[in-house]
Amino acid sequence: MARIGKYIVLGIAGLLVLSGCAPVIETGRDMTPLPLEAGKKFGQVTIVIIAGNLEQDPDLIDPAKLRTALEDQMKASGAISQPRVLLSTARDASEIGRAEAAIILTRLHFTIQSLRFPPSPPLGIGLLYPLVTPLLLKRDYLKLQATLEAELLFYGADGAVTKQLFLSETADGRANFFNSGGAGTTGELVSIALHNFCRRVLSEFLYLTR
Image 1: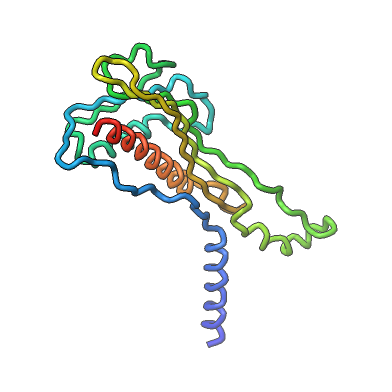
Image 2: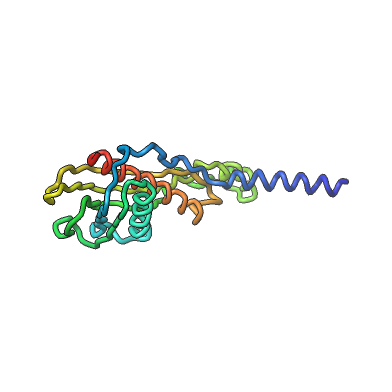
């Protein structure tokens, strides 16, 4: 019985440590209903994503993920029968051809921002490091953020710009020393940021053309 009790205590301690290591996702998915007009349907709708202005660095999110996310949301809306999303390496929208809208990306990154330095043991004595372990389990140790910023252009039937606006979306999370933005956390934050950004693009398009 003593051995069973020991295992139970160790199991509970392990669960507490694991739960403390789990990151916290602060941003939720935007599920606001789209501004759909009853019975109104669109044929082929083309949106061009222009990614030539993005800085190439290790924090860059693959623009192809945005292309896929936007096309999936356009299909799921039920209002567009032939969604078409193109990815361009151009720097502006001067030569994109026939399109209903253009997304000129200026930022598409995932970053890890340290909120504070690792705590030191009391008096600098290494043997006292266990005393600071609970502080390392706090999930405000690191700030994680996926960010999208873009200029959005809408075109009329004559090819002229009918509306121009700036869109910015972020997905925030918190983690600690033992979970500094692992693949699972990164993927979830990026997925939320892409979803919410695409939702806003599609909402603006459906609102302006209703």
